Amino acid sequence: MHTANKISIHPLNENTLKVEFCEDSGAPTQNPSPELCQAIASFRSALIKRYPNVIVDCTASYTSLLIYYNFLNIDTPTFTKEISECWAKQKVTSTQIANANKLVEIPVYYSQETGPDLEVIAHKHQLAHEEIIRIHSEQVFTVYAMGFAPGFAYMGFVDDKIATPRLSQPRPKVPKGSVGIAGKQTGIYPKESPGGWNIIGRTAVELIDLQHPSDSASLLQVGNRVRFTPVFREDFLELGGNLS
Image 1 (spheres, rainbow, N blue to C red):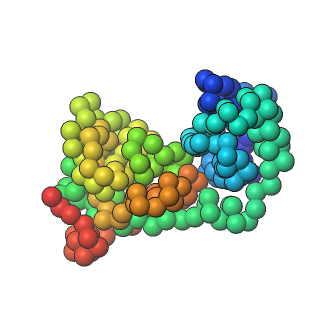
Image 2: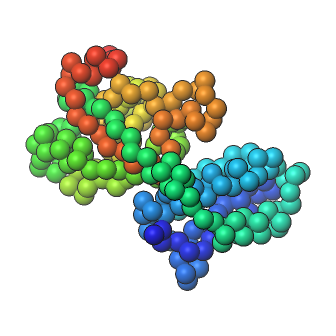
């Protein structure tokens, strides 16, 4: 059961609404549980399906939705009221739950060759590299938000034993497929880009395909569960991994 029973809706400008998911008291929830995340993902899908000519984009985050809409097709008070009514009547189907709750397995080559910050985390927490890998790969993470770059999924929450702040000086280039930790979050860089996360390994899995429609271009979606599976160097290369 998700923890938010109410929503509050705030206009941010003439064509953007922020929907916050709230406790019974009306205060925004501070508990981004997997169940709430999956409920938000299902609600997002329901809104997009119901308002195809109104919603331009709809972005889910830990405890909120950001809705960009065409104000020429609906006025803000009417749209706000209809969103509230839609949430009050929402019935999550088994298909929606299955889609949101999908488990995605990501093979990762954990090593100092692909994880230059394994030693940083090991030193900070006084752990062997093997223990860091075990802790990270034994946990099932939830995708709470998409952002930063197309296909980049913010996943949580990392065990306190390996939770590590971002680098003080971001790298100008982080290789595609790099798996990292920032605070209590973990994530994968879909493409080579700048970044300040602590890199502990790399995957050969393609996370983004821009030839597909925007809603299906990303392998990972909000609400999905993710498990990282350690693989050997040879397996990583056979799967198409790149060590450069």
